[in-house]
Image (cartoon, rainbow, N blue to C red):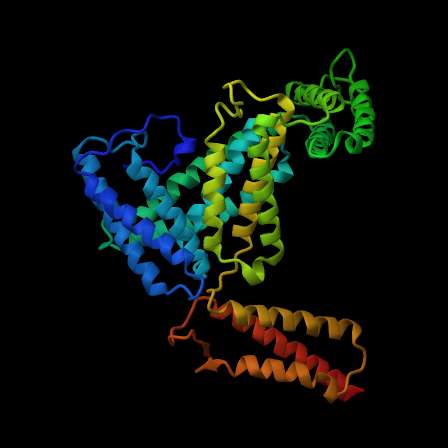
Length: 458
């Protein structure tokens, strides 16, 4: 088998590419370059046939690679070389293309989401700053992906002509197992904290995050709030009896002392550094800091405008940049130009920004609608029309037929775009997302009928 762990995430040394794998690597690079060229073409919609054809070619190369690895006795998960890195990039790109085509419920679309989830988990594990509530959205999504994978495996088991499992199922299954193990470890860390201590722990997590956010502000601007947080930390510290937190009901030492006391002491350390140092990022690390800040700002803008401007494949460049930055860390720490670990406050600030960016990428992936980009203009118009009709229903009061006429005309113009009951693309194909768009269309008609009925009653 082959590894699909990105170079930045694996400690194993990269092996040379054998002569048997060289033609496969060359073809993988060609596929990746072709995908990159398609991604840059913003003048045309993606053609499903082009993407699926390239994807089938990738699957063939994966089978060839499996055969070569088996013959060379390199078929374990630890072995990796440049072919694995390029293969991982190809699968992430295909995953983004599948999302752009509205194929959200298909196995390839889940791959890049699992990569991003794992990156979030690794940073949570490194910093130790998270609560159970932070894990809930990831847990829900992993459960959904598990259902998709299990259903696909069941179909393959029923299909006697299938032969070996599809490579995308193997890859996604491996990624999914890694994420499930990571989240189990993260949950275990908080599970040992007693219920009586959980509010204190969550309060400390909030304070820890706020201290990191304050580190981005000028010293004079941050100091007032820092002093308020200091008061709260002292109040929490005073809750201890003989340096231990106890259960208020029975006075027994509460479980989870290590996690809570450790986080309390870390908060005091961060607070001291913040109040003493002011600026947290050394000059030699400012370019990295500014690069992360720029990525964060761009991703936050995309989050606001994604419905109208985002192509899921646009996220690829951000994913690559973040993985490059992540690869600069050694044992979870950023190093300065002398190879020494950066100051604690700088580590916290940079890790916070990196985690924030990964989380924004995940939110953008999660917000992707199961609608092909060729249908997105219609989808967005219907969403806007539905919102307008809901507002009219709520606040509009008695309306005449003349008042409703513009909404009727807009709804009729959208409905007239259908051919034989389907919305088609420019080439006459039926794009993904018909069910979602038709549901919106029917909802708009229902709202219109309600408003017309109310007008008649008046």
